[in-house]
Image 1: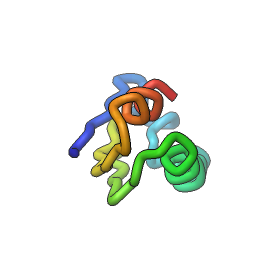
Image 2: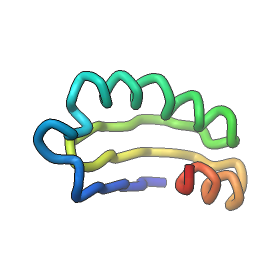
Image 3: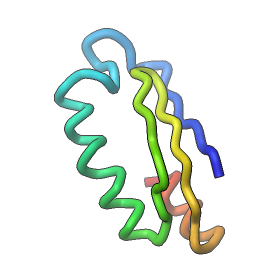
Image 4: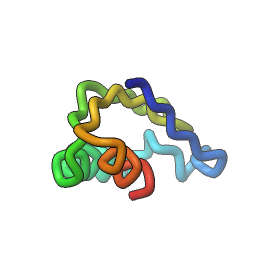
Length: 68
């Protein structure tokens, strides 16, 4: 399943490509996916949005992952 998560606020100094935020994403996105039962197959950080390819074990797991 392909999921896109976008933030209109993530530009310039607070871009998701900023080293501070990028480090956080690299650590926490995989950790969170394992915790809630979503297999993270691939993700791409595009600065203002993330593309995720995921395989949730349940609908509830996907919902929890997207709300976190």
